[in-house]
Image 1 (cartoon, one colour):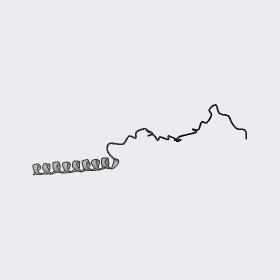
Image 2: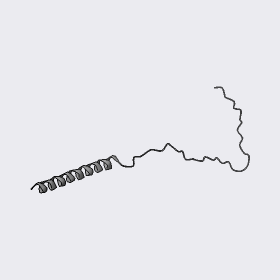
Image 3: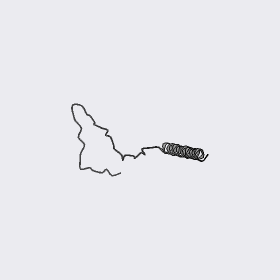
Image 4: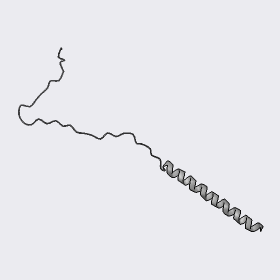
Length: 69
């Protein structure tokens, strides 16, 4: 195999310490948008609202029955 010549030549120190700095850096990724309410919480709120509406309708019907009698 032919050796590829580089325009840079490797230089190693004759004295002292040889150190390699491999600094890890944080990589930022795109933020993930999370819903403010979970789907379960939204379902529970809808069920609660439906139950409240049913109770309110029953109370109104009960009052109407008392008025007509």
